Length: 117
Image 1: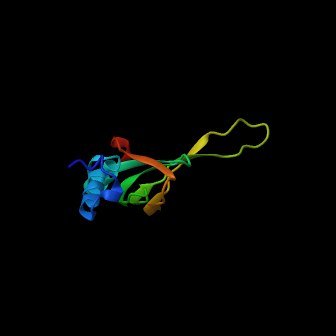
Image 2: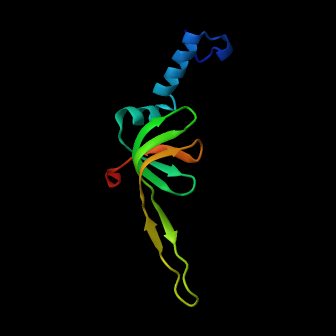
Image 3: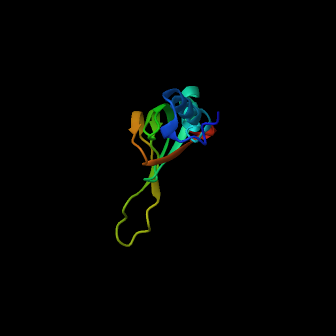
């Protein structure tokens, strides 16, 4: 029986659990599930223009994420005195041992290339 065409209100508890499991294994949340199971380096792009390479520890359907060994990366532009040239951005990258990211404040993860390790 196809669970896609059946309304949720008519599904049994077993069918709902199966439908939810398929969503985690094949749907858009499969990227999150695989990043928790395989423990690869992931690269999270926050909406505050900060980049977060690290390892994913846990995530849920509400996009809350627990990560370890994060390295918060962003560029800070310092103010310059009057009459001087515009200052160059300075890279900031503090290490964070554990981080909890709440809900929609970040975009999806991507597999890290060799520069994240």
